[in-house]
Image (cartoon, rainbow, N blue to C red; front, side):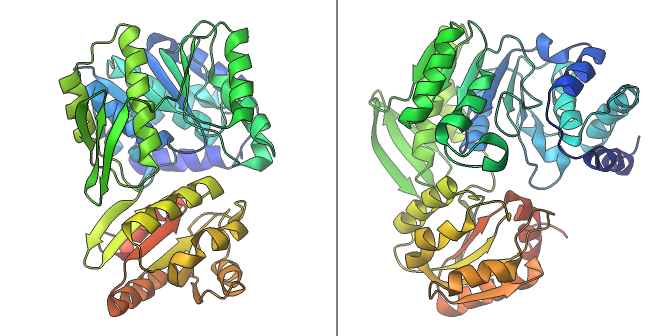
Length: 423
C-alpha cells in the first residue's frame, strides 16, 4: 500500500463520523490479536498538558534504556507525527504498512471502525511489532469512551488535570468531565491525578477507591528555585538540579506531574536513575507549546485552544513579554472563544484572526468581531498564509513579539507560511 492509499483509507473511515461506543475498536483489536494486552502502557488523559507530559516521560524512559513508543493526537504536521519510536517519527512507508495490515480486517467487520479507531489500533500494532518495552499513550478525548482505553492493566494511568473542554461530548461541569477521564482507571492499577479542582478530585478519588487503584496526588513540595527563560526551565527537585528545554509557565505543573509519576514508576520496578532522569528531561523535544520559532522579532506558537489553555498562555505572555504582543489566532467554533478577549486583551497591540483548515473552524471574521467589540484592533484573513504574512510584517514594523495561539490544526500551515518547513 502506498502512503496516498493509506490516507485515502483514513478519509473513508473519517466519513463515518465520530460514533460513540467501544464495540468497534474492541472487535478490531481482537481481530488484530489484542496488541494492547502485550504492552506495558502508561495511559494519559486530562484536559491540558497531555502532549508535554508524553514528550517528557517518553524522553526519560528512552534515556533510561527502555525502547519506548509514544502516541499523541492530533498530529501537527501529518498523521505519522502521532507515532514515535524512541523519539523518532515513523516513516510514511511504516505507516502505510500498518494500514495495509489493518484495512482488510477492519473492512471485514459488520460495523466498520472510525478514523480515530483505526489510528489508535495502528499505534498498538506498531508498538508490538517494534518490540517496545513501554508505550506512552495519550487519550484522544475524554477517557472512558476513548479508542485508546482498551488495555486491562496499564502500568500507570495519568489524569493531568480537569477543566472545561469538549463540553458537547463530555458534559458541562467539572464533575461530569472528571467522570469521563476517570474511566481510564483500571482495577488495582496505579493512578495519578495532577489537578487541583476539588470536584474533579472527589470524582476521581471515589472511582479509584471503588476499583482498588492506588491514587497519588499532585505535590509540588519537593520543587524549588524554578527559573524560566525563552530557552527553557530549570528547577530543583529534592535538592537536585534539572532542566527541560520547554517554555511556558504552565510547564511547572507538567514538571511536577512528571517527577511524581517517575517515582510511581520506580516503585513499580522501572529502573530510572537520577542521571537518566536529568538527561531525559534535558533532551525533551515537543513542538507547538510556547515554541520559540524565531527570535528577531520573537515568533512563538502555542497550541492553547480552550479557556484553561488560553488562561495559562496569557500567564506566560505576561511573564516573558511584559510589553504588548501582536496576536495571530484561529480557533474551533465549538470553543468558548468569547472568553478569550478578557484573558488576552491587555497584552495585545493588534490581533490578526485566521480560519484554521478544519471543518469545525470558526470563521476568522466572526472571531475578529469578538475582539473589535472589546476595543481591541482586529483584522481578519480567510487564508492563513495571508494572516501570517500581515501579522509578521506588523510585528517587525512595531518591534513587537508575535504570538500565534489556537488550534494545533494550524501548526503545519503556520510553519509553512513562516518558511520554516517546505509547503
